[in-house]
Length: 456
Image (cartoon, rainbow, N blue to C red; front, side, top):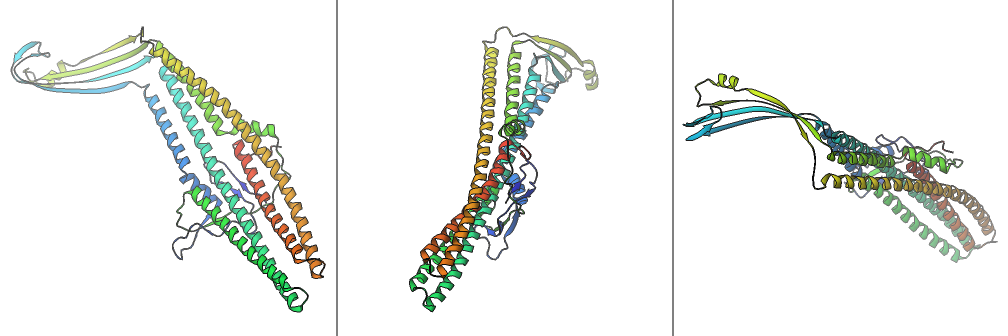
């Protein structure tokens, strides 16, 4: 059995799941409205819901939007400023009229208006470095969002594998119950015929009761697996759901991976590594921006204004026309002594860049360990599946042989019960091993940050 979930972020994952017999269907969740049909949710639906409703995904989307706003702000900081000023006043008594150039002793109204603009021509490259830093931070946020989406999809895939395994475990217990009930009928017939003691019937009835308890417990495992999906998808706990796993295929037991190739693929694909690399770039630009604080700043300024005063006999239009004027200016600001502010800012930026480099190295190490761990888990899962398959085959033969001996009186019911218990245990172990191998395949895919198909 092989579950193939696509972990591509931002898309509805196409899936071909290998399911247990019986699949992952059935009503799930806590009790909903009485008589209401359960909501059918396929794996693709679950991925789509998780990408929309997962809290971590929403937070990552908000962080991406915030970084985009920062980029926009840094871009606009390089444009010239433009402001309009309008000032009005009502003067009473003796006061100096700037527009008339003399002292007047009367009530008058004055109005002045103007436009002013400034443009930074040179600031040591601070604006450019700040813009590049903001863009690098935006890239890091986008990569974080991609990895968060992959994590959400992987969680959904893990939940569906767990549900598939729980359904398989339930099927094993149900089949065991049916077999024990059929055997109870045979023993009852033997007892009536006098070929078996009544104690065998009582013992078999106890085994049937225990099998019924195991079915109940297995059903609880299915229900809990559905609860995990409800929690992952942030669904209404009071509603009922029918979770449907994708179609089943065979487990690729012959699939092999090369550890070095997987690590190299992870270094290329992992979005969180790309995010940290972008943060290193942003920190480097922050150092340049801080160093620019030691350089001169050259700016261009311009203004244009006019005024009106009621103390003059000229009309408003004439006054506004005669008193209009403006000017252009170039200013140079040279930092001579800033009490060490620029040097301290540069030092802090350099330390932040060093920390970002250390975090990048640590991230590469963690990724390599993630891949190695997933690789070893997959190899172990293959061996466990091989052993479980052989164990079940041997247990089935043991049951057949013991039952045949029991029918002719050469074996006791205890021996039959022990053989059947071993068969049930082996069947359960096989289901667990099969689904664990599926999960470890997905773990490798998640560890490398994308598909690992063909990496042998």
